[in-house]
Length: 168
Image 1 (cartoon, rainbow, N blue to C red):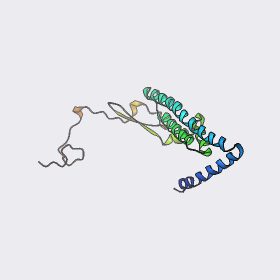
Image 2: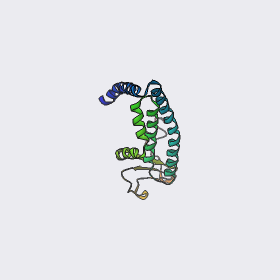
Image 3: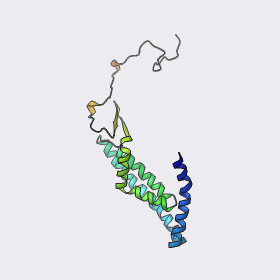
Image 4: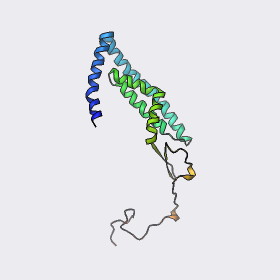
């Protein structure tokens, strides 16, 4: 809990110091122009890269592949764009790094063991973990019941009963 608080406290101070240093070397107007330029670049990269990620996500989902990587990449692109839009040079550096595919792939390798994608179709639910890609669909734990396979018992106190709480 202390790390986020320290970042919230020290990041604005570090950004102000970066503004002073950059302003000293390139001038005030150039510093302001660079700040506005990175905001515009962040918006345009979000638009272009975001559309590409959405197309790849649709393609992965249509082919039945695990879309977890594309979801994480999309989230990192959104974060990168916000970091570029926020005025400041340190956040701009982190934002530009997150737009680089090999940095996102490195972050995906760190996050991959903790990501599970749940797919819902009209007839079944299927959960897959990014760490267990060797499981075939026939080995999954999907339970599919027809109307004849399921019936309600006489226990009216069951939380799944439609008659819960009704007195006869």
